[in-house]
Length: 201
Image (tube, rainbow, N blue to C red; front, side):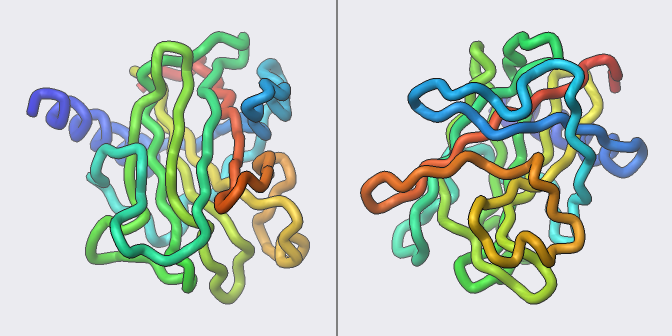
């Protein structure tokens, strides 16, 4: 119960910061299980911010899997780390994910395909979900808000390599492409979030 209360407080701070302040995020393709280098690497190379869009909902449940029994869709596992621009692991960072279902629909009443978690002591995270669908006007994507402890939240969207619609999407940025591999019946995606920790809440 105590953990849930702390999580909700931090989430409210995240939302307030997201509305009140500009968001800046450095991000890159993540290392795979073979420890590929982050793209871009931590340092001064920052990625432009991305809009949260109209479908964000506060107070998502804390969980590492967004998949419930009977859900349809190709399985996707996303792993990576949260790092500072000085290449240090950021532990305890709140990472909030949301995306549409396999048919391109967002759940705006409940919390299907919505959830948050916290990075571990090494800055690592792991999310199990499905491949999001596509809806008119956008390419395939996953929304993410990341907030390091006592820092302003940063928001972005992650994109899938090889999507034909990437070139026509009005906000697509190749710097936000995940590294992707096929593994048996699921796709394995990797991405490292590189945060500028110079701004406190």
